[in-house]
Image 1 (cartoon, rainbow, N blue to C red):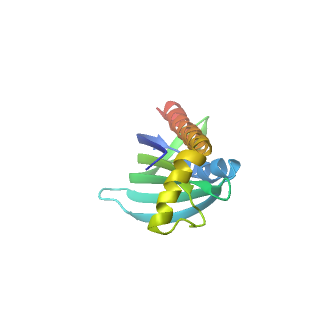
Image 2 (image 1 turned 90 degrees about the vertical axis):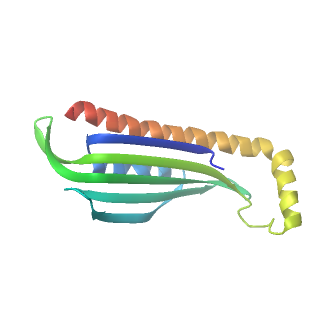
Length: 164
């Protein structure tokens, strides 16, 4: 089950370096440990290239629960273009960018509930004893995910208006 999911897809000209450089600092500012888990680069079917970046951001809230985000940025048929912004020439990217954000609350971090009987105890523990705490974490994941979504979306819209 995903506690937060968001997707942004945009075609046009944008500053990929600027988008890329927002991922780690944003989640690190929220106390997450960030790891770029995957990077793929290959020639596209036309004149451009396809790139896929995948980050994992994790945080532990207490001994039992934490959170994890997966951020995937893909570029399709992208290529570099020269653009004049504020009377300065810049190299930007033209193509289709897709940003997928998923966030989840993770429980039983130490794997204490590892047998079928303990799984039943885990359900009781989570649905009755610590439900308010887990609900707070899920709300927090929603807020963080939406804040990041808005930041990236605004960045791409701002660049589109500058280069439009």
